[in-house]
Image 1 (cartoon, rainbow, N blue to C red):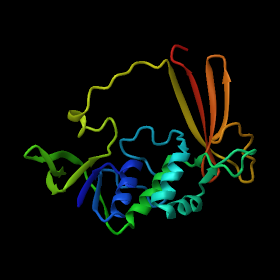
Image 2: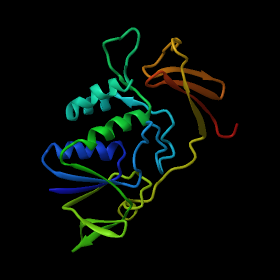
Image 3: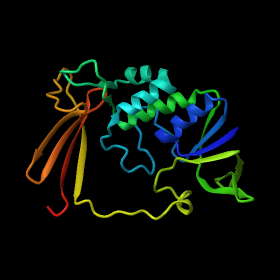
Length: 225
């Protein structure tokens, strides 16, 4: 089956590799060209890309099940299993920046024989007889037997197929910034698998430990403060 996936984020790339290993020909379409040669990456249209992320045990289990060699690639890139000092053999997730995790996943997908990464803008879904038959990419039609939209909940392609979002102000806001540990510096204490948490009057702080000696400091506060 020829499958077109819109969106080369974690969901799109992981799905592409999993489907390719089941015998399908998969094309992943995203307007972002990927990381630069120096490994930096300003991920286009993903405004939360450099915020701290938590990759939980479910992610580890999925990688082990579908793309086991990616686990070794993550470790080689400086990522580490998220454990606690009193439970060193229990993996709760993986400590990694989203940029590092996506870079490793993208490199894995790029060498998968039945996966093609195509840089372009998916303008619309091509429809015939009430079913999707392909995608219009940069003004030209690409035919597929199945189209998957992995462009995220704000993606334009899926707006006509989902109900309007329901929500409201959650009452909190947050800011974060990434830092690099000095060579040989100690990471400090842990009190949850991904780092350190502290609660104060009307605000909270988190330290997310990432890969390669990087970490994020995040402050959560009341919106009316």
